[in-house]
Image 1: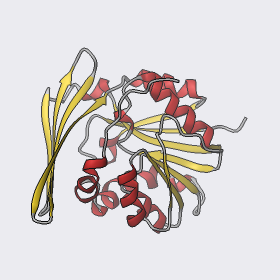
Image 2 (image 1 turned 120 degrees about the vertical axis):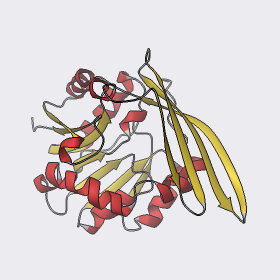
Image 3 (image 1 turned 180 degrees about the vertical axis):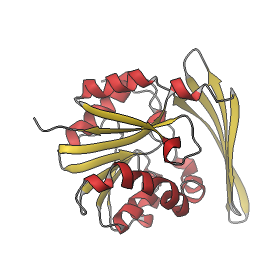
Image 4 (image 1 turned 90 degrees about the horizontal axis):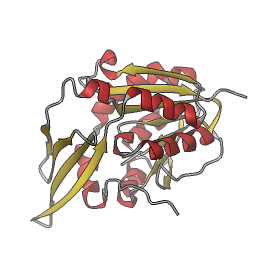
Amino acid sequence: MSLLSPIPDYEAFARMQNELKSTDEEILAGIIPILENLMLQHIPKEADILDLGCGSGKLVQQLHLKGYQITGLDASKELLRYARINAPKSNFILNDIRQFELPPTFDAVLSHVVLLFILNIEELTSVFKNVYAALRDNGLFVFTIPITDWFHEIAPPIFDHVNVNQECALIEIFHYKPEERIWEIKVTGFELIENIWNRSDTTWFRKDFFLADVQSSLEKAGFKDISHYKLKDFGSDDNSMACFVCQKKAI
C-alpha cells in the first residue's frame, strides 16, 4: 500500500472555508467567465461535469443553475456536508483526488485552486490518470495550478491571507522553502459558537511545479491535446496561476 503525502485537514476549518472563501459573487465574476471561455462553450448544455476538490460546493451550485449535471468530489466530510446544503440537487462523492476511480461518464472535469496541495509529481500524475479514466472520449479537463516559473518572479518569501466576518476568521501565513519549492502555511481559525470564541490551528503545505513538469505529467496520463494560459490574461490579479485545458482524444 502506497503512502500518500499529507493534504490539508479541513474538518475544523470547514465553516470558515464555507463562509469566507469563494463567495457566489467571486465565482460569478471570476471563475464562470473563464469556464465559459475555455470549457462550457465546447460541451453540451446538459453535460456531465466532475468538480475535483469541490469544497463546500458553491461552484457546483452555480454550474447546476446553468443547467449542467454536476458531481462534486472532495476528501473532507465536513466540507461535503456544507456542499450538500449549498447544492442540494447535485451529487457528491467522498474521496481523495489521488485515489478515486470512476467510469468514463463525464464530458468535462474541472479543478480550481486544488492541485497546489499535491506535494509531488508522482501524485499529480495519479490525479491526471484518474481524471483521464473518468472522461468520455473528447472530454475536457480544465484546471488551475501555480507555476514556479512565473510565481517567484513576483512572490515575497512571506505573505498572509486574512478573511474575517462577524462570527469567524481565517488567517493563513505563507513561508516559502526554496529548496523544496514548498510553501508552509500556518493556519489559525476562530469561530464564535454559543458566544464563545473557539480557536483552531494547523499547518498546510502547498507545492509549486515547473510548467514543463505539469505538461510531462499530463502526457504520461494519456493527454495529447494540451494548452495552457495565464489567468491574468482573463482579468485575474493572480500572475502565478496557470489554467490548463486538455482533451481526451478518441482512440
